[in-house]
Image 1 (cartoon, rainbow, N blue to C red):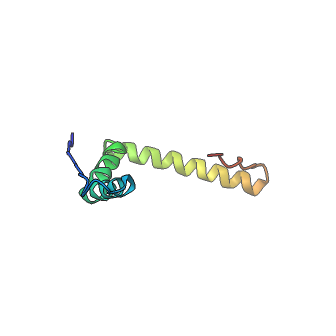
Image 2: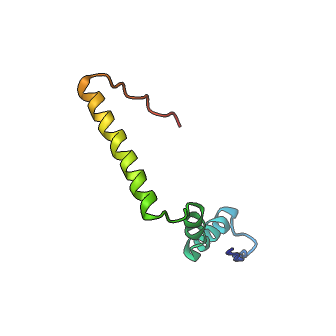
Image 3: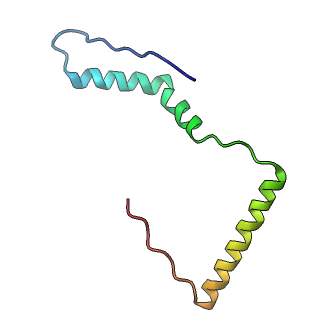
Length: 83
């Protein structure tokens, strides 16, 4: 696990809070902590060749079925998701 300590101190007593936060955010971005955490968050174990082929066959069948239904006029698209 990656643990880093990023500290930012005020340059003087009159420095605004927004400036301190902005400098902290810049340091965090430059250190690359956010990018590494996001990449680890989405890590998936590599699949075997057999499993990849099996999933590809399933995807192809679903896609072919969907195109056939569209050609026949039986396909009704789903409403887009609300965020």
